[in-house]
Image 1 (spheres, helix red, strand yellow):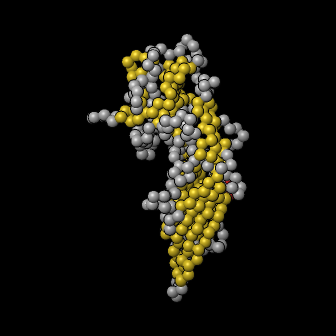
Image 2 (cartoon, one colour):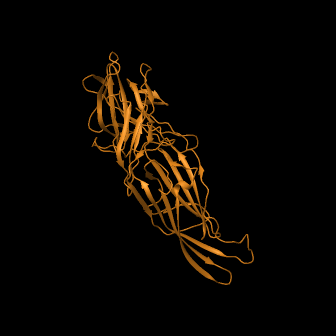
Image 3 (cartoon, helix red, strand yellow):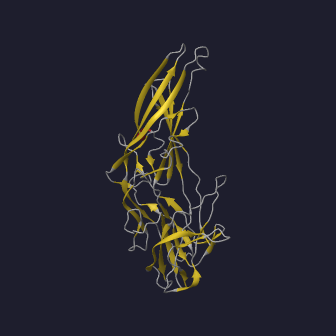
Length: 373
């Protein structure tokens, strides 16, 4: 048995973006609510902006100052799109309607991405009306293993009365969070020869990863999140928190439905880690999965690979290997948590008869975002 190492790097992300709000026609003046996606920069990281080619959905609720706690649906799953303008960088606004700020009271906003016209779709979060919109749910959402899509929800922007200055931009403050987790798989060789150990009798190896398979991955579940409203504090934002308190991880309540994912692309290894399938249409990168705790003998990874040995004297031999491991064996990554970007590096050593795993965990830097006008 040859040896390979699997290093797991877990990255937490608060992806940011901008969301749009709209007004109601019966109690509006001519102060139109428009939105512009701001760009954000976190220290040395590149600028991050919500992609202008992906519409998102918005809900808004009206509350009169004299009737605190009573909310009226103000914007019902409006589609927000980016609208380019000549000589300008464009702005975000409702695709089919024009909305204005109310002249009295305020608006509370919750947005999600990507937009779905079918509000009953499991991909659209359900917002409770019987507790002042303090509960948000995704119900029996199923991840498409062949084409997984990133889904996001925004912080709740409360008591908004006008476009205001936030983070250096004017608009409704919005911060999107990832509802799913994300996997990346890198591959590399630990060594390609034994020159350091046997300088006079060098053996060389060629290592090829033929296929990587994820199996027994939960692909359907539900998420319930709650928040606490803040009244009489002026325009503000409040975060959502996972309602599951029985486990220590930020995961979904999964059903029994499981799936598999196969990446099959012969890739010759070097001692530099590269994304498996890099340069192909089906690369093992940014693969969205249902957040889930990792249980013994459930979620597994299988690596199929070939080692060609070229020994001194011209002797050549080729052998195929297949190794399966449980993801639960990597204690540094006990769960695929919501909003986390997890990278596993598979490192294959052609010398030895054991399989070792060396997980590492690194947090991503949070990035704030706003909607501006």
